Image 1 (cartoon, one colour):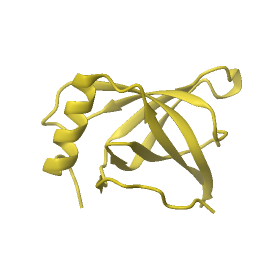
Image 2 (cartoon, rainbow, N blue to C red):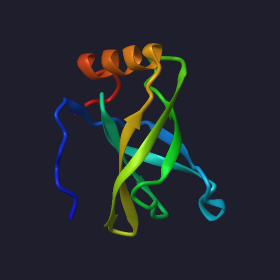
Image 3 (tube, rainbow, N blue to C red):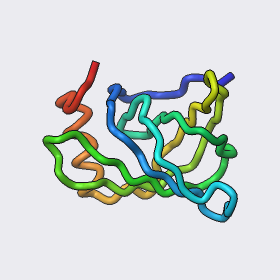
Length: 115
């Protein structure tokens, strides 16, 4: 079971994420649903498992108030079965300053469909 290590605020969002795993042909790309997102990482549901340690590229379609798509790189830290899907826990790596500012604004404002 995944041990909680988050140290920053997380919000739940109803927007989609496109992700691509580096160096894995059989799981080239996927569109998934975000479970929650924070300044340091993201959790999303996917149809296929992703191995902890894998590097992935994620493209987030942000809430309507933020028109851009945000590209992030991350390392998978955990993958848990959830119903007929998998919960993928990812820590962000090498976040560009502009991307970091966008994430911080969305998280602090609780933008989108936060609950």
